[in-house]
Length: 430
Image (cartoon, rainbow, N blue to C red; front, top):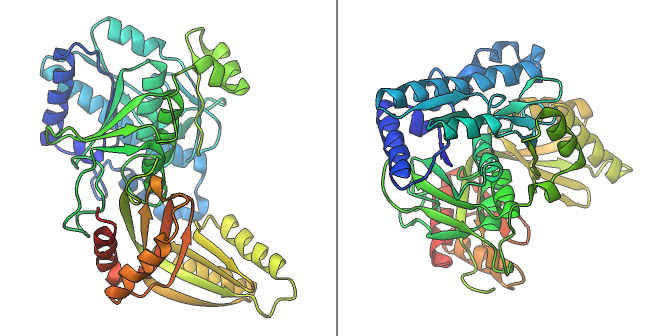
């Protein structure tokens, strides 16, 4: 199974490298299946954000089902163009939409979860010597509507198809040599990791690193399928995803056992070849594994001191943000204060919503989130102290921080983001 991201399919150079990877897999005795993303990034004409810009002036009339119809076009275009290109090189190929590939989801538009896969048409193509080129990021709902799997969903498509087809491995191709200890644009000493646990890569993705969709990592771990993150444009081996140290044995794919009742019912109604699929959003060594940097954030501090019921006041704020589809990050509740992080692009709307509620608030704009991730961080004392000391040595102002078992995220000024990342990279010897 080979998945190629947007930068890999954005130009003929990428197409030629893709074709070389496909041909190499064939020469090694494999029957490759290719999953593709939309071509390039904004403002490339067929990139997902470019397509969405067509309806941006009509945002108040936006319909999730129709948004999915529009967003799904980019991957379909890629699959058709790449299948034509491969055939000109003598590689028999066939394009498939998500529906044609047998990917069935729930009805949750823009963030659908895969419920079952019917791989019969893909198997038929493979048996006839053709290379399926599948449009990633999409599937078909019970109401026969096109659905999309969320940002980065083509990774989930590749892993899910890999599970259904019992692939030997899934190769995720992009324009970097593998998963790095930090963004090389921020940290010049960043290096490619030879291996990374599924838990770590999932956490890094959730914190904002565009390396692998979190659900793809969870699914790969659940079904025990090997995943390698590599570059389309080089022959470097990339980063291998492995089981967590606490796992004594990788679980094996048992689709009929792990499938949900709803998925089993859908599979039965679809085809006897369909399999239900679980799509869940969900030792000591070096403490830290990698650093993730996300610029363009805005820190909000809502003052609820005047309210007689802090809990209800907090709920009012959170309900308003949810109703207006504002994504909140690093939520922290301290007595009469509510802290959270938002995208800088949401700032104007959030100001309006908070003023409507009548709550006092302060805003710190031009912020960034710097997260340090490590599977071996769990239960180790003193990690936060080391972070604070490293930032203080470089006079980086720490606005606030939150943590989980394997991640500590810090909010700093965006102008100090690179300095913060470099200091933490050095402190934890990455």
